[in-house]
Image (cartoon, rainbow, N blue to C red; front, side, top):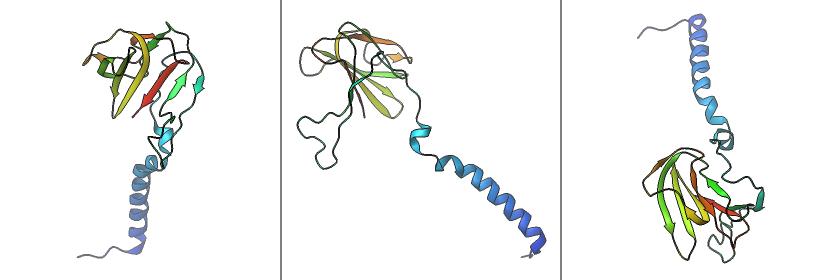
Length: 143
């Protein structure tokens, strides 16, 4: 094995460090800063925020989503591009649409009507349906 002199080794080490730093720098950015940007599915503001407790994740009254204010009949659009994994009733008369967006599943409810079918590929902003009455707006859940 041949030894490298100190004057030669320092620039090589500095260059290697610079390359490693450039590759790892994006990983040091908080994940929220790297999150993809989604469209707002309805124009309203937050009517009820997300509420979650690690100690009681399924407690009665917990709100595992966000409500966006909108009147019944408002057109609901997909916040992201993906594929429809569910379009229809779940438990009750209102409809639900769930879209797989990358590694997330986004659910929109309650809907009075549904404009997409299961397994359909949709683009960001695609019409999913219209908002039902009886809720303070659109409930948007992300898992």
